[in-house]
Length: 263
Image (tube, rainbow, N blue to C red; front, side):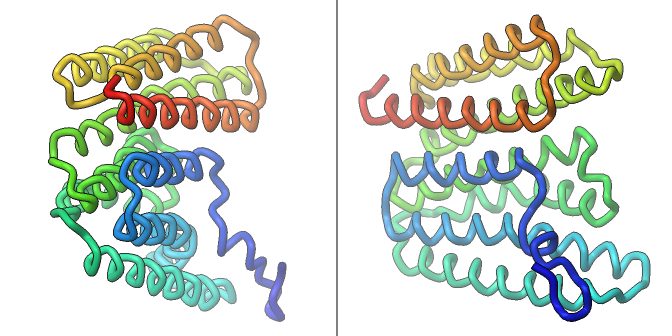
C-alpha cells in the first residue's frame, strides 16, 4: 500500500523481521495461557503495540539523527503516535484491573530495551547485542502479565528466565545458520555453548522450582534441534525463521502445561 507521496505504508507500519514477531508473541501467549486476566489482556495489547511502534520510531529517529525530513518521516511519526496511544490504552486497562505489582519486570527491562532502541536508531539492530537485548526485553511482558494476575515474583520471573534463555539460544543458532547459508564463517562452538548454557540455566531454575520441569525439557529439545541443524546442510534464512517460531511455540506450550500440571 502506497500513499500519494509514494511512501510504502506497509514498510513503515509493519516490522520486517520474522524473529521479532516470535519474540513478541511468545511472552504474550504464555502470559495469557498461564494467567488469563483483563489486566493481562491490557499488557498484551501494550506489548504488541510497542513492538509495532518499533519500526516507525526507528525511521523517525534515523531521519532526525541524520537531520533530514523525507516523505516517510511524517507517515512514520503518525504511526508511531497511533501505536503509542494504543499502548497507553492497554496500560491504562492493566493499571485499572491489576492485582499485583506488574511494573517491576517492565522497569527491569528498560536497560535492555534502551540498548535495542539505540541500535535501531543507528541502523545497527542486526548486531548480536541489540538482538539479544531486544529478545530479553520483550520477554518481560510474560512476567508482567503473571504479576498483574497476582503471581509472586519468583515464578513470574522464572517464566521470563525461560523465555530469555530460549531467546539467547535461538538467536545464537539462527545467526550461525544464516551465516552458513551465505557461506560466511561462523563459530560452531559458540552455538553449542549457547545451547548448553540455556539448558543449564533453565534446568537450575526447574530444580529451584521457579520454572516448570517441562520448560527444562523444552529447552533441551531446542538445544537438540540446534545440534541437529548444524549437522545438516544449511537452509534459507526464511526457513530458519519459521522453524524457530515453531520451536518457540513448543517452549510456550510445554511451559504452560508445566504450570497447569505442576510439572
